[in-house]
Image 1: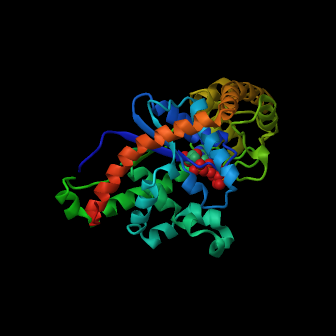
Image 2: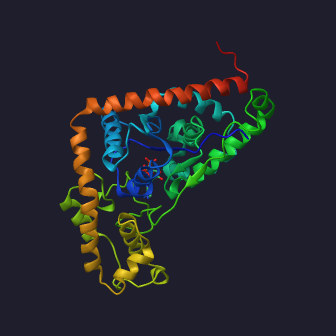
Amino acid sequence: MATVAERIFSGVQPTGNLHLGNYLGAIKRFVELQKDRECIYCVVDLHAITVWQDPDELRRHTREVTAAFIACGIDPKSNIVFNQSQVSGHAELGWILNCVARMGWLNRMTQFKEKAGKDRENVSVGLFTYPTLMAADILLYRATHVPVGEDQKQHLELTRDIAQKFNTDFAPNIAANGHGDGYFPLTEPLIAGPATRVMSLRDGAKKMSKSEPSDFSRINLTDDADAIANKVRRAKTDPEPLPSELEGMKGRPEADNLVGIFAALSDTTKEAVLRDFGGAQFSAFKAALVELSVSKLGPIGAEMQRLMGDPASIDAILKDGAERARVIADQTIRDVKDIVGMVRS
Ligand code: AQP
């Protein structure tokens, strides 16, 4: 198979309320990966509009996610940072991959079932085809690895299925166009660490989420020290002290979640956290977690606020990133058109 060098791609939706789950499950990992890989990080505004977005808010949130990327430490010069709608190849390849993906595959996507709920007939068609656009985002850059939270695992598996089917369906033309025995890589998800699925602070069975009505369920990246302290103190726990070993966390989802957050924020493991806090009451553990969270998230929130004060600079970063993304994307679109059999000038 014709392979490209290791390339990272990932995206975050500009849908507001960026939270600790987005940070620990995704953005913090983006920062780590930029050290030795080619990385492309995208604000996926076309995904955001699969549910209604107020236009002014969409613009603001697009800039806010960009500000979060930079405040968390992503360097927009050595990586590509842009918003999806500025590179038309996403929508173009999305359409072609809609014609490769099968209805049965999309019907199995649990995120659609959760988001559509009982209102299936009334949600946008885009919400249903969201995963094929996500496959296009990744394959447009022939990305080899995608850092995501646990909730995106199924969509990554679908991306591999779509890539595989494209490679098989068009095998003779892929070879005839000089791409060996496969054009798209079978992208690997990068889902690792102690916080791949950060749970709600109010309910250890629910994912921390942007759209949860209760703001106490999540720590937002823009929360100040008082808000963080208040939310951690009110986080649901159980009456037992912390165990000293992981085994003792079974059946204690809220405790497990807080320990996972602590471990991820301090770049260690849950085991190491339990070694330090085994036997401690939650009052003591939460006090330490507040201190840690404020020290890690406080500077990010402050920097986001500073960057948001200068939207023109954020727009310039997105423009520059889009221009560089387009160079890669346009080549893929030309290749794909040749492979599929479209006449182009
Ligand atoms: N709770 C989480 N724990 C770990 N990772 C998470 N991610 C999201 N929630 C968690 C990861 O963050 C990245 C960007 O996510 P997204 O912008 O695609 O959308 P979302 O944040 O997943 O949206 P929400 O919070 O789930 O909003 P709603 O409320 O609309 O359902 C992804 O890599 C994701 O895995």
